[in-house]
Length: 211
Image (tube, rainbow, N blue to C red; front, side, top):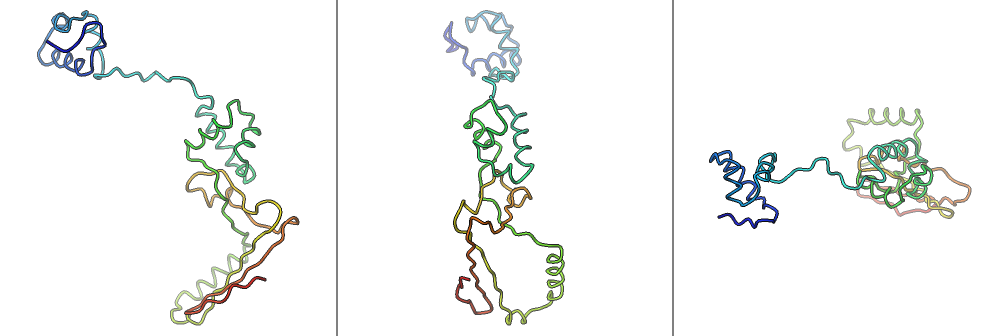
């Protein structure tokens, strides 16, 4: 006698047993109803299941306040320009006049992999600079020991005062060098630039100089 208790929900293992008895042992629904002490309509309902557990593909629960279509629209909007990328969550929410809360906006964008990250810093290169660098690289492509006589120097600029020089943008993984995620640095009137210089070579490292 099965473990099923009349009046209780039929366990999943019993649902599967009913299906197997019907298909393999050729038990009739009326016989199964007597065996499990349930109504024949209950047996027929179990036999109509596509799986031992009832699937509910149309059961969605509460609708999202910010559905996928609106999330796609928000992502498309913030990806258009650098200014829109720099909007923080509250500013983006206010600018788009969304009906949901800021917390919901953050949650939905993070589900898509979008986070607030420090913008990539990259200065402009003119066409002449690009061409000159390419020609220089081609000219020295076969150098070997000659590199030991070369010093490599670099200069970096820190902006002190005013707002934070490095801004944050909203982006997902892999978009760091996207044109709308790059912050092009310029000297601003409300900041003080501080330059630092250094050089390295074969077996040599210069002191760090502040200019």
